[in-house]
Every structure is written in C-alpha cells, then in structure tokens.
Length: 403
Image 1 (tube, rainbow, N blue to C red):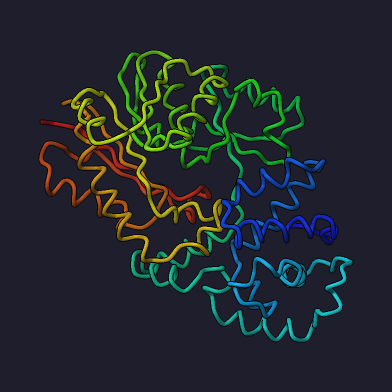
Image 2 (cartoon, one colour; image 1 turned 30 degrees about the horizontal axis):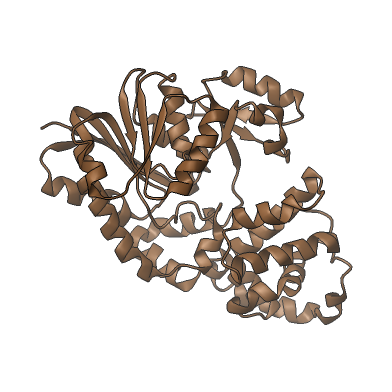
C-alpha cells in the first residue's frame, strides 16, 4: 500500500481509467494499455496507478459509500473516490482542488456505518453476495474477502527456451525480483514492481505472465511429446502455450476458438514462445467439431464462465454483470461439454476447467454430464480456492474416455 499521497497527475490518470472502464465499457487491461502507451511513466508510477485503480474497482461500492457517490455515477467521480480512498487507508491527502469539498467528519460517520456491513467492506455487490452465499454457504465470506485483495503477479517459465533457474538469473540481471511457488513447478511469483513486458526475458519468450492457479489447469492434461492434443476453447492462448511447452514442441496441438482475432493474437504469441507445433483453427460451426471426432489423446475445455474466480484480476466484472447472465452461461457450458467431449479417443483424457468458484459451473456440470454419459469416468477434480491458495480461483476435472 502507498505511504505517500498520489500525485495529482497520476490521480487524473486513475480518474480517466475509471471513466474508460465504468462509462465506456472498456476491459481494465485494455484501458491500462490505452492510457499507458501514450505516456512516459516510470515503472513505479505505473505500479502506483494500477494499485489504486485496481483497489477502487475491487471495492467500488465501499468507496462510493464513503464518498457519498452512487455506484452508477462512479465513472465520473474519480477524485471524490480518490479522496475517500486516501482517507480510508490513512494516507496524507493529495494536493488537489477537490480537497476543499472533503469533510473529515462526514467521512468518519460513513465509515462507521460501512463497518456494520461485511459484504460492503469487501466490495461485494448485493447480487454477488446473495449468489455466493447460496452456492458456497459458510465458505463464502472467506472467498469474498480473498477476492477483494490485490492479485499477486505470477509468470510461467517457458521450458521450450529455458528452465526456472535460468529465468530467475535473467530476471535478477534485469532488476526483477522473483521467487519460486510451492506446488506449481512452472511458476514464479514476481515480488517487485518491475515492468515485465519491457524486459529482454519477456521479449525473448522466456516466460508468459500467467496466474499460478491457471498453470495447474494445463498441467492436469499430463501431455507427452508426440501426442495429438486439442485446446478447444483456446482464447488468448495462455494455456495453449503451456501445453506446447509440456509437449516439448513435438506432436500436434490444435488451438480452437470461435473468434478469429483471438487466434490471430495467439499466432503472434506462439512465434515469440517458439511453440512451432501449434495449429490454430476457427470453430465456424458444429461440423468443425464433428470432423475431429475421437481423434485426440487429450482435450482441454476451458469453457466460457462467470469469471468469479478471477475478480481480483478483473474487478470491473462485478459492476457490469448480474446473476441473470449465469443461466445462459451454464447452458452453454453443458452444451460444449456434451459436444466437444466427442473429440476424445477411447483411453484419452478430457480436462474440463473454469475460472469460477461456483459449484453450479464446476462439479455440478461434471455430475450432470456423467449422469448422462457412461462413456466417461471421473479420475479426479480440484477446486482452487483464492482464500486457501492466494491464487486466482479455478476448477478442473480430469475425465477418462472409457467407451
């Protein structure tokens, strides 16, 4: 956390980012890219802006309550929120003209009132608190609190170009502090505010930025060199690149998605990573899937989901989504699982995964699928809890095709 006030110039940047996300509907990562690209900011300044913006969005309703602002107006009220943020964290106030309108006594009264509402203190909107309580019961308050924390930074070593020891050495040369992550062999936690994407290590393809929990998903496939593997919901391709590295670049890896622009971006990432065995394929209709029936040794279904396990990293989701979006998502997950599972050959392994912590998207889907399909058996599953692990929240299930 900061110990000194945010410079007004950086505060204006935070206010602009809030407007981009809350009023313009821009994803937070894209807003950062847009705003940072035209400025000559030092790495520690970028880190400060990201820290404050992220915390404001993770607990937006709390800071709105403290500032006397409606959540729907937050995108245009950056400085009142910033002053409430400074006061909440007991940081000296920045020298800004809006300080004249800040009333310490009013703030203290609002803070005492907010402390009576644990969900508000965790920055949880009412719809999400109700859903989390229904799905997770007594476990929900701990998960809710964990999702209000700032995310840690993790990278995955690209074993196509080196090992963990070599990457640690290279990062240290470039002034990046990192440490190993217990239980995740390919992961390093970045413990400094370094600008990772400007390092030679990144530009040379020695690592990818990827949460440690996410790295456990591709590892569950247990791929081997020479296999035929399908990543059927590849998206931006982080897990695709992890699979390619585990295959040592040998065999055939088909990365599929319904959006061509994601596959185009993946092609660029494969070049930097040296993942030459990746083939991208657009899913144009059901025939694309049917042509691959019983053809794969391994299939990864990282299905579209609510994303409620990664709210630390994508806090803007809380203020754009509602519970009503879940029903069609759950139906889509079931449809993908039923249809895409046919690509697994007998004796092959299917991994179903989400970045959600809701049982209805996770074990509930697996139980429903197995109740209708005796051609698969469950080997094991795992729920990665943000509260227990410090990682983002994920679910993965390993299924074997037996008939």
